[in-house]
Image 1 (cartoon, one colour):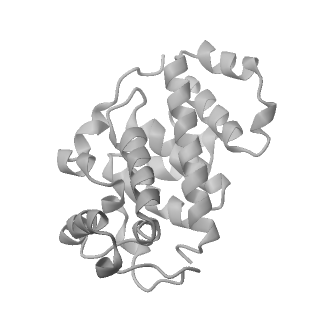
Image 2 (cartoon, one colour; image 1 turned 90 degrees about the vertical axis):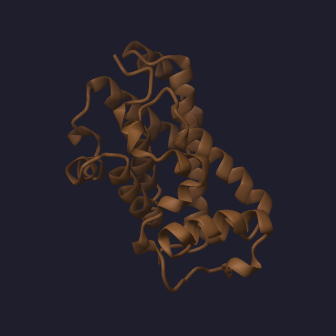
Amino acid sequence: MPPTAVSRELTSIPSGVRKKSMLVMEPATNRGGSMAYIDLPELEEMKPRIQDEARYILERTGALGEIFKLLAVREDIYLATDGMVKAYLLAQTELPYATKERIALLVSLENNCKMCVDVHKGIAKMLGMSEAQVNEVLDGIDGIRCDEGEKALLRFCLRASGKDNYRMQPEDLDAVRAVGYSDTQILEAVAIVGYFNYINTLSNVFGLGQ
């Protein structure tokens, strides 16, 4: 049966980071000279509320990632996105962190979002996944060492991420319920899928990580 509470990987996220943006965890390989298709603001050009988050990141890592800078172009968009990150990815939820990061990687791969794949390879490791476990996800669902129920959920999530998701039927949800997932867990998984379709689109359209 799939877990109904967060796994032991929770303890690998410091409480201070949980209260801040997940963008503090953006790996250093995605920083440096930007080739983005839009002008990205520097610290002094950001709104005061975003500057507070930015200073926290700079104190911990020494640099701001491109995703953070892109969102900082508009304070309302930054705050809305940060709220989703904290609610879906950082909070203690019904799905384990490993499952959430597998969804993140699989959807980002499906959307050909190099930036998000690279970011979440690093984040998955910070959350306790090994290099081998991350590579399993990158090689596809069949090779992931997890139970068949979780694989069914991951396949459902990939289907939900596609442009033909309007074709999904009640039996698609029933198949995921049948392997032990509750409606609230399925809703959470689809919300995470929706978030990554959103952030992948922003990253791809504005040329982040190029």
